[in-house]
Image 1 (spheres, helix red, strand yellow):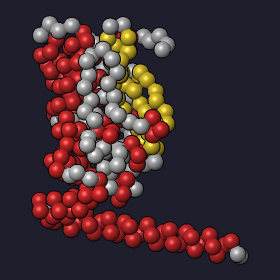
Image 2 (cartoon, helix red, strand yellow; image 1 turned 180 degrees about the vertical axis):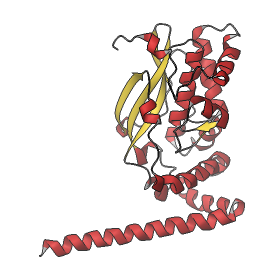
Image 3 (tube, helix red, strand yellow; image 1 turned 90 degrees about the vertical axis):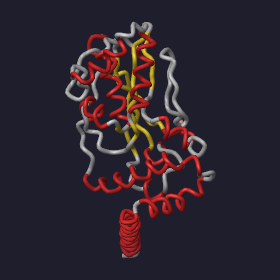
Image 4 (cartoon, one colour; image 1 turned 90 degrees about the horizontal axis):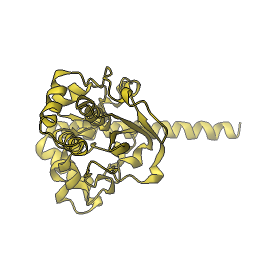
Length: 272
């Protein structure tokens, strides 16, 4: 790995606001315990993994905002960990993967959700400089989500970190298109806003993630997921259940009409 100016991996940025008082207060609680560098980094990793719940969408957040919201995307959680590490005077940065979006989330994603995931998506994780070397760690998934879905979803295996060696999500290498890092700033990635047309699918997707977090352990087969989610949604959120079914019915109908129009246009022009 090429040489890096470690100083740039200690500085705050607009979104990595390691100079924020809330971020500094959390970091100070661990620093004051007199831990060595690797153990300090490890404890901060578990703080982020276990105090923020995973969600999709709405990643345009500062680290301090993720801290207050107690939830975020892979980007938000990695950014919070980087900010805490920098506040603790440990050099930290980012790894950014381009991944095949629909496959990246694994087989627990229902087809109507996966159709709304970009074919090429970003996955962000954390780099930490400990014991004179760069180490990767990924605090994306909260432990309850991992534990309750890992029997169905290989990607969801719980990530444990010893502070010294790489600890990453269990992603299929075939779904990783590109992997860059360590980067000192990803403010340009965080600042890119989500498209408006994705807001409803993202909202419903986060409801589905909550279902997986609460009920995943009770589901033994992937084939049971769709029916189990519909039952859970109907029992707990009846109005949302109606909206969910209606939204994806309309979306599916519109997509079929578009596909029919496209195939008809191609057929007519083929013989023109």
